[in-house]
View 1 (spheres, rainbow, N blue to C red):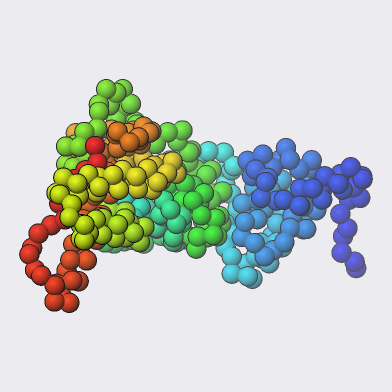
View 2 (view 1 turned 180 degrees about the vertical axis):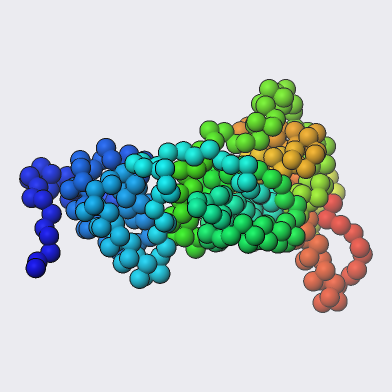
Length: 388
């Protein structure tokens, strides 16, 4: 007996189906029922999707939940089997009581979510455990980078005991960490996904994304503003002293710029300090100051400022959760200062201190190398002065 053929479509319906298949990634899973005109179209759409890309998993699970029709369900199961044969994981069907398009489900008291502080290069660890019927938890341990994206995404359906064991290991291995909400975790996941579509954790995240988004809501603003309303920092002006103290805090004292980017700046300053020309100390200081001002304008582009704003907002959130609201307010003030434009007469105090700290570190390393090669050992530091 031959395979059952799809309903014959009109020329207009066929053209529409072809158009949808041309760019499946443009379809919104939450609106899939409105996009596909009915079960016949949904069945044909699923059957013709390529089973070689994990990116279609949110679509076929959305279709499965939106169209209870038997033929659609069979098509989804067949496509799911083909995907799993290639090593992908298709989320299990909606639990009892979840018919039709998935509804937002309120988080239960047994849900857990944690974040660590941001490290020197924007890396952060995330943990979540969400109850999953009929028993157990959907558990995730994630490494995100605000520049490199989803570095690692591990997710599994585990028992409650296993979830608590993994949480215990997470708390032991990653410090400091603070408790947060699944909404906050989802925000960080989505930002990391957008940072790099080719990061190694993107594909496994896409498999879990639809299920996670059905149980959480993306915040309109960063969650730190729920802890520190914006009016609480209005009127605060970031000073050099505030920036210096902030970068001396244990959460930020290892922050630096990428040494590979800053090495040419350090080389330029080293040439000035060791110039064969007879320059006065004042002339050397002014020349170094000019170099720092010029290079800061070039280096801290709008996109880099956005990255540092986000890092500082995230740090402010962790600081507040750690019981340091005053330091958190300073970090948030520094975050908001990223909106201000620099000029030849004013440099952002936080970014300037970050630049100087990184250049100092590189120059000290260069001096150590010279000493090892037989140079003079005078023990002096570079003594860079912040650009005004």
